[in-house]
Amino acid sequence: MIAAVILAAGESSRLGQPKQNLLFNGQTLLQRAVESGRLSQCKPLIVVLGANSDKITPIAGTTTLYNKNWEEGMASSIRIAIEEINKDSSIDNAIIMLCDQPFVSAALLNTLIEKQVETGRPIIACAYNGTMGVPVLFDRALFAELLLLQGHEGAKKIVTTHANKVATIPFDEGSIDIDTPDDYENLIKLRD
Image 1 (cartoon, rainbow, N blue to C red):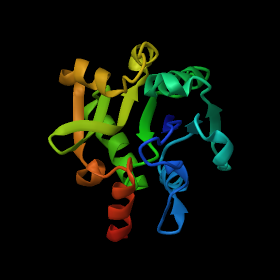
Image 2 (cartoon, one colour; image 1 turned 90 degrees about the vertical axis):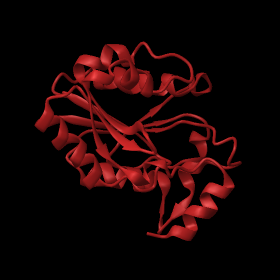
Image 3 (tube, rainbow, N blue to C red; image 1 turned 120 degrees about the vertical axis):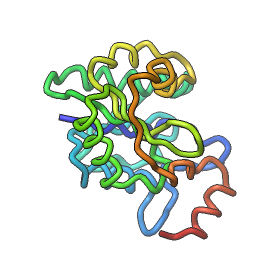
């Protein structure tokens, strides 16, 4: 099995409101991320909430985890999710994704999985803007390293450390994420 981990614990301080609740094409950003996971080959779907969790409605069909240490940074959310995944030995891989990339689709997540099957590489990352980033699939063999992340370190640290073990898939829209009111305004203009 392949778990999908949706990181949604951030404070959205630059935005001034919980980005998880922003609407785009009739769904919140969090609902869009969960729907992409649900329509993909991923099971289970794990959502990590933290800041503003009292303002975010958990979504049925997901395992919702609450990261009380969200202020530490993204690493704390990754750790809490991997600890949960480690309880189920039938999960071979985990895809880490963010709730603020509105163009992540089930097809993209399935392509990550297919690329891993095709190449046997332990890391499959998305490529955009000359970099590798999320969503990114990690083989269980790397879960121990994910558990060692600290502070604001994201999974990219492990992708960079193991660059020779990474295969990529193109995701041009991966550079579109929502951090500021301007980002959201530009997204609304795009309407897919």
